[in-house]
Length: 175
Image (cartoon, rainbow, N blue to C red; front, side):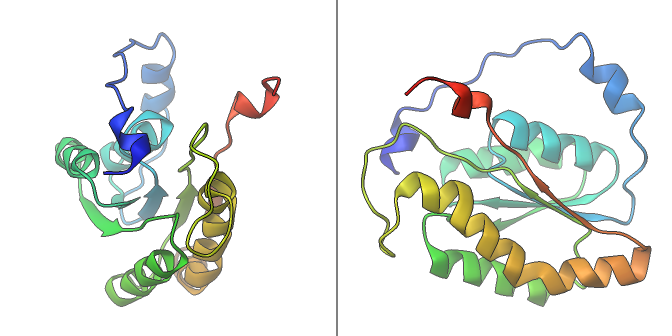
């Protein structure tokens, strides 16, 4: 496992005052396919869980890990989920994931670019980019480019498709 995984600790289960009502008001996603990067915990996990509860087929795009396996098991309790291995620190892995998506799915209605890292060791990926820039930005752009035809197909079939880019408020912290 990577150094970031060894620092991982379970998130606190905090009851939301507002989310249950918000979730109940969301429309059905039956017949939709939603792909989410970085959905082992946090906002990505909540996004994937909510989409599964609303009837979407949810594709979990995570790097291989016990956390990813645990997330898939937990999310499967809420609906239809499938994992496509995707390590956003490796362009080849992103391209393989995109190829697998094209092989398995006719269309993707939503791509949620959620995964993000921060405060990792200052080193370069095998392609020579900063780990944080590679993971949080470059690979998401590559993934979006590679599966854009699947998004276009969803728009043709169902009238719409979208890319959702999550961002962190950590950018506001002083350096």
